Image 1 (cartoon, rainbow, N blue to C red):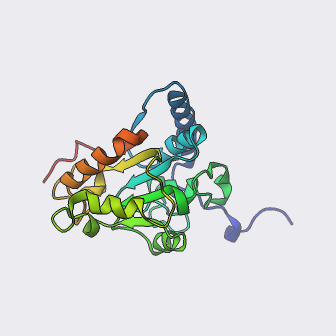
Image 2: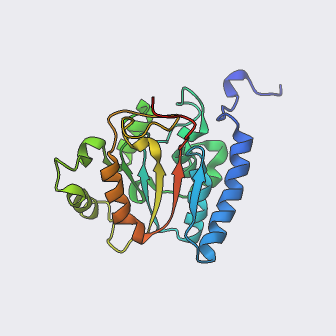
Length: 226
C-alpha cells in the first residue's frame, strides 16, 4: 500500500511557502547587515518576520538575548492555532516545535527569551512557556505607578535565576499590540489591558543601547482609532 492517510497529513500554517521564502531572504539580509556593522530595524506587517530576522541574528551572535514585547506568546503550532496564521507561530519555528521545519531551530526558550506584555494566548502556549520556565512580565507587573518605575522590573530581570548578565546583547522583537488598545489602535490585533506607552518608552531606553537590532511589527495606520 502507498500514500498517507488523512490522519497522517502534515498540517501547515497558512501561506507557508511565502512565509518560508521571505524568512530565508530576511535571515540572509539580517545576517549580512549585522556582519557589515549595521543596526537592522526590521519593519514588517506581522510577527512572522521574526522567523527570519532572529535566525539571521542568531547566526551572527548566538548568545544574544531576545526581548519579546507582545500581547501574544507567538509560540502556537499549526496544530494548536485556531487561525493557522504564521504570525502566531514564530517562536514555535525558532524553537524547533514544528517537525517539518526543525532547521529553523536556533532559540533556547529557557535562556534566550523574556516576555513583556503578554495577555492573549492558547493553553498550549501557556504550558510551553511554563514548562520552559520562561521569564514573563505581564502588563500588571509593568504599571509604573505601582512599581518603582522600570527599575524594579529590570532588577528582577537581571537577578533572575535564568543566568542573564548585565553585559548581554539584546534583540528587541516589538509588536505594537503590546501597547494597550486604548493608547494605540492602529493594529489588526489590538488587545486591551496592555502596556502603557510610558512603560514601553522606558523599556526602549533601557535596552536599545545594548541591542544589536530590532523587529517592529503589526502597525497599520489604515486602521484608525475609532
